[in-house]
Length: 262
Image (cartoon, rainbow, N blue to C red; front, side, top):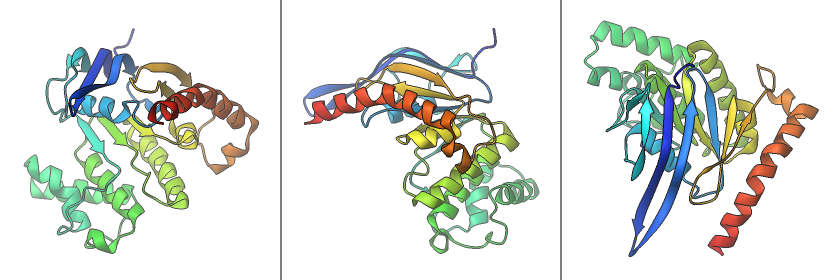
């Protein structure tokens, strides 16, 4: 049996809020295979970002263990590249400067840095914008720069926390297609957080539905919609049936979260 590239084994995590403790994630086990794109889907507050942050090594579980290639994650994990909803670009650096930044920190020689930056700027279709600053770019273009910077550092895993949520609907759909294209080109293993059923259905190999807080794995649903997936697949009966199946798992948790918050 092939070892998963990412694994969470009976992981729990709580946070202190004022004088009380909130259990964000409880007894969660999850495995992601090499080359998979797995979407985490669930109600607000179900622990999606907490799970991603633990895989990145930004925070540690209270109990259980998270592993990358079978080795426990004990601190910030350089083999994981993290893409947030905010673009996290340096406003005083150009597109090229932002893409090269991680490589510079790794002390990659200048010529190789430039070559790799050119390659990934081309991959995200930003040729001609190398010398532009973030303020001169649209939101979608800024997120492309973020992707190029992460990919240039060649992480083994992409951890993506709602990276397209701040974009308008049309740009978001374009970026989903770009991510699928880049993933086909690079084969990067990706753990992707979203609140959008449609986004999960377009992107994922498997959809992991989490329960309302505390987050547990409620269901794991394989996505057998044919690749490549584009807008047209959303008109198919297979898409409608799968969306209904996923929503049936999600709806009760969304309602439970709303009742708890009321």
